Amino acid sequence: MAQQNSFDIVSQIDRAEINNALDQTMKEVRQRFDFKGSKAEVIAEKDELILTAEDETRLRNMNDILQQKLVRRGVPLKALTYGRVEPAAGGTVRQHAAIQQGIPSDKAKEIVKFIKDTKVKVQAAIQGDVVRVTGRDRDTLQEVIAQLKAKDFNINMQFTNYRSN
Image 1: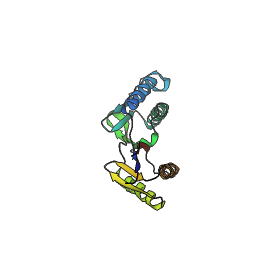
Image 2: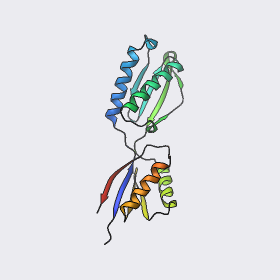
Image 3: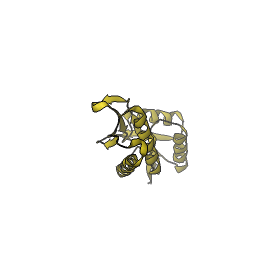
Image 4: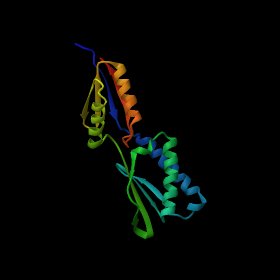
């Protein structure tokens, strides 16, 4: 039987790093002069972040602080999908930011189509929220990884579970 090598394309975020970035953001917001007496806060729900502030300027400033902390902690900003700013209770504004966990099916189909269009001798299969790529030669798998890194799919991608059988 021929040797098969494979790797998985995943999109995973470390929740502990997000929580640490949120804690650091709230600590900085409480200490900054332009946020004194403000009701600005960031809350982590199950699969989203909720940013709340008195006005859009403070919301934008708090979002900038949050993004700096996320980048410093190694969380890619492509993992967040921001909703629109909406009015909330008490004269405040709110914005939801969805946290992407796993590759959505439409993006997975796009990735598989891209891999097939490269004409490299590998097979790509969607397995839930993971795309598995298998091939005979390690060099072709490395080539596929390089091509995937070069193309922007507007999602956070990691290449894991690299196996040689």
